[in-house]
Length: 411
Image (cartoon, rainbow, N blue to C red; front, side, top):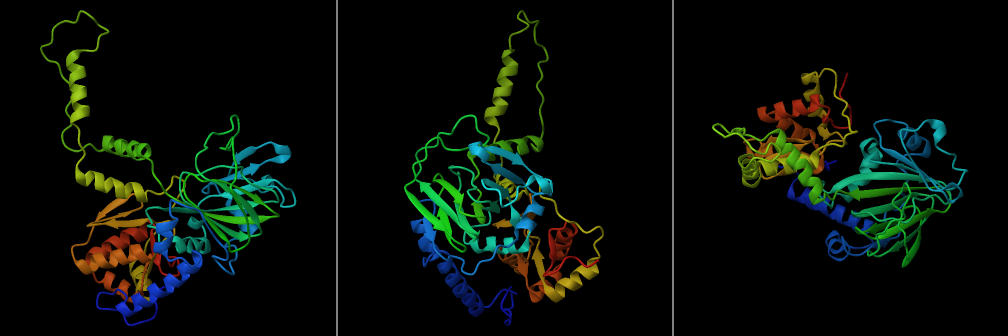
């Protein structure tokens, strides 16, 4: 939340408040990053070298207890996996799970992995927000793993950056530099065929290990434990183009010419591809060019598109008067599942693109909402006074993307 201070005329924090916020954030980041500033961490370690930080999050407590995490894994809107290595045999099962399918913590060699817990729990979402020194467009989710003694998923590597935060109990991590990505055949998991660790640590609650992409790692629980894994989004060229071209095919824009061959002569070879047909299709493929606007809009929609299993709790009927009155008193906050990004004069939210409001103060308010994921009561009042923003925020509230701060919609 914003500090309680007199707002500036634009509704943004004053320079003095912003400086105080920045100083407080810098101290918190230095603790999180082992005494390094964010700039130092990004220059020395990000996508280069691992970093172990003891007591990165001192006095940390698990955002969820074991029972709550197991109950999340029973929800069909939550991605979860159960990895076991009983008697040395690796097995993988996908959720949702029945209560009796998750073993007791008294039984060793199993791990429950629950993906994107930040989308379902406010405390977990708050923990993940500590890593917003990396842009939201890159920040993906916070997975929590619950492991019994000797539980793990085998030596493996990720194609993205990851912060491994020990939430409860102890886990021993061994790591190895990139260079060997061959997998053991015939297993349900991507376990490395060769793993020769060069460093090893035992992490206790509050300790954190950062690993760049490609670094092999193997985490083994020493007694029951819980670990948070903050992962980052790193789209591949193939993934991006596959989605972009599919989107372009659905909305090509402009005329859609169809092949024709009026006046052609009788064919002598029925199975041969006609020269004119091949030439026209080749020309369509080589001459097609997306517009700059279509590319920019798709990038924003692509980066904010919710996962297939993400559903918003839209109010059955929105009482706009009560919604805006509650927001005037408390401010706005984005739903924890909402992705809101902006670039230049366009805003992108949950897979949709929106033109920026015409007035600069209104654009600034939307940028503040995106950056801080909330507006103060004063800022909400300014937003409600703008007809463009009122319409937009009302639409987002009806979709369940936005709520009055610190509350759900009143009944």
